[in-house]
Length: 251
Image 1 (tube, rainbow, N blue to C red):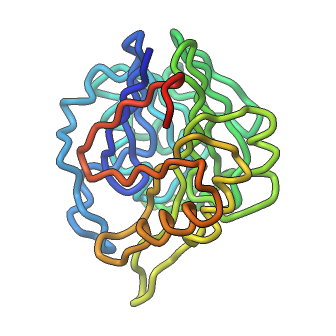
Image 2 (cartoon, one colour):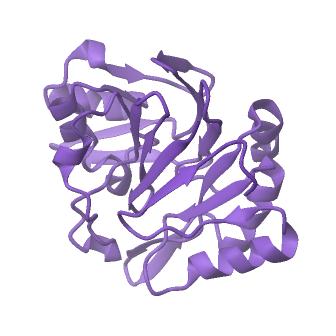
């Protein structure tokens, strides 16, 4: 059994379980170079069979295409209460937009999603209104394909170690960089901190995310992991690339 992972862009990933359940996390496809973020080579229609759309928080580079993907696919959208209000104002049906806080669970088919704490914020403007809510990370537990952790835009905090102890993730996506704003990079978790997080989590595979091309943050993360935790495989993914993770296979 295997989990199929495709890198969309920035912190966005498509996960497909061996039972065919498709989960989209923090989907951004059409950035168009804003704040230095490249657009995804993945077309939105390729996500029309999604069953779950997870949004970690309200930043534009995490929620950008989530509503449209959920609208087209009929997927259930899981998010914080602020992102939910925006989705409702954009016409998604109430029953298909589930707001969660850390500790809440959502089950669809062979997938159980647990929302967990993240150290960041979810504060944004949309349609002339401001929204604020708890930022989130997600632990995605599949029936046969392992456990995946997506921390959103969290900075390093000690309860990441607790998340590792409680949920035993096999694979983690970890932010290692940030976006450009006002002439500087906004970075929540630096490569060396992400390597510490990978060790705390005890994962087999770590995939860097949330970095801009050309800065080298992903390579610095790989070097830090190799020095600190040689047992962890770091997989640097290109936009649109597919990686097949087999839980029982040697990393």
